[in-house]
Image (tube, rainbow, N blue to C red; front, side, top):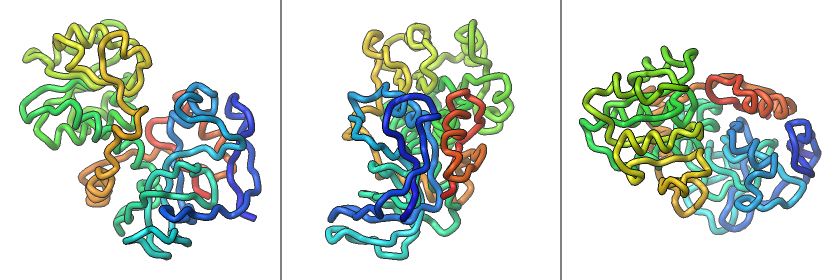
Length: 303
């Protein structure tokens, strides 16, 4: 029998166990993928802790994970354009921490894209792409991104810079050099960040993308002159500030971005930093590392 990581109650990383499961059967609109790599996202920890039960209802046992890459080994009868043997990646609502996953919208993996990068890309890449679409910046404008040391922030920096946008990025001291290398003007986060941003952008800041959830919305609004110029993916108090929160509504997402992002990554025009890979059985350690913010890039499981 194949194995997967499962949990039967909410809690810390220690609730994750290696379990034998039945081979999942694809619905008419799904493919079954033999997983070669699965990424670990911060949202996996929030779901495991029970913080998002209103958005992701709990039906135990749960297989965690949203993103995977692998080889198609079964195709639902209503699927077109994908065949058994194709290399694909995408989002797996049924869970990706396992030897098999079901995927309703697989994307063909470019030949030059590694399994690890393909698995790392869907959630963080789509999130960065979507936020920039909502902000609708033009070449020559200035964007402040909070949390550019994280994967979403790092991808957003690169996409924005490629579009001719000036990016100011807040980050931890250990990440400043890396963020600068991506094309942003890097400034330390923490107390006094607004003054440092004003000094780094004397021309002013047009819009703000918050990936940090670090209580920066009020000062960000003051910086740009209104809540409609700010967007967040991490601050659950967004509505109190009149700021748009994006990410919880599936209809808000732009999965059509994934083929473009994959080609950019495969060609070397977009960097998605892989911090560490783990055997599937070490999924609890991978989640614990993310929870403790030890990572400097994506964590990826290899079944």
